[in-house]
Length: 567
Image 1: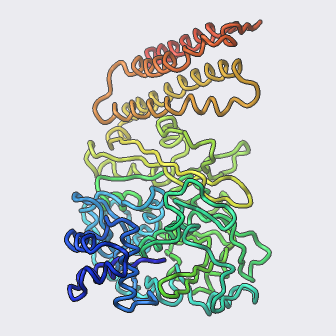
Image 2: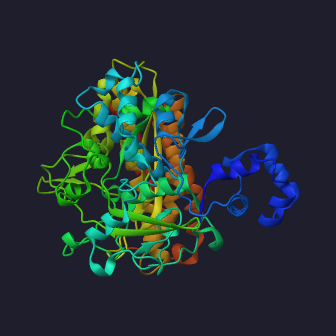
């Protein structure tokens, strides 16, 4: 069921309909209906209450097809954080008041990323060829809102050939006879529970630990549906079966965002975040909504050469049929354009060079799930920065030296299975830093030194755990190592982040050593009393578990001393 919250509000506002009458149909008590009328807070309403009231609306006010206009530019669907909490706003409202909003506040951090890239596609198109830094102190001008007005029809979600929801005739013209849509057809469709990446449940793979009960897995507001459709384009798996006839011999693509390990910037408010993540691109910008559908389909296997097109790269074509408020979402899988090192590099992508010197794109796997961003500063800031991070140098003379930035690394991690490639975990890490720390070579060098020292100490701790667990267990000890290091990594990240927020101590290396040593004493040292560990002897050094502990402490001390010598 798709819930229209505006219609719930209309029902509660209609005082000609008594609370008793609403209660009788909805199954709620009249007192509960009266309470909802009194507080008038749809956005914080419990899902079960919203479902009950929307069903009452359908009965009492006769709405059955849910085909009222929902335009992404004028209808509220993007959650933002304000000084008073969260609320949903339209695209136009967001751009008008971006400086008043702290940040995007969607259903997950990867969803915030997908919405950010959608918004940036609009900005990249309007301001193509313009240096983003010229906007930071001026705001968005009339040209942006003129563009939105001129393209309003392209953002009508319920209209024909919207980029998120194409018409049935268009869909049928692109697929085989067996895959065409006809009244009542169910095959070739996807449920809300599959599109909602908090659930990610397909017909064959139930989600055992879902954020929603079985009763509500296929329930969403229209704004939620729009958000998840946009997110799904970036994080689609490969379980859908319907292909376009033009590409019947091509494999269906998983979402592009699975493939790039996105790293980007958050500023002090949403306006700054948008501008700081804009990328100078003087090529003509062609987001998906500016293409004729057939022309877009013809070039699907050609890698995009501009930012806006890449930010709106789809993995599916959707058509939605409505029946008494219930959507049937038909999906056709699209092929992926293959990335080569000469292709346009996604500004959010983390690049690296393989052993042959060929440029590749880094992506997160389940092995990276417990990684902390503090261990990756050299990679993020020096060796393999995203183009967004590299572009921060343009703001060193524009923003105050004490301006606070948040370096953010977030994505869904694929299960890694070739037959599904669905989200198995949500990864989201962030680190607060000032412009001054990045622009001043000495301060940046200190940040990198802290990261290098933390990496050296982590390697020593990991070796200690590996040695001890090898004594205790036969077979694969990787799960034991991960279990031991995960809480430690969080402690290290919290400690370093606190230093850069509240002041870096002069003896940071000793304090960092204490974090590792104290954690080892609390969590590894007690294991040395286990009989199997006590009795262990080895012909080579370290000869026993106690020497393993001594080796760890020696390596920690060495890492500290190397810092003292460098400073």
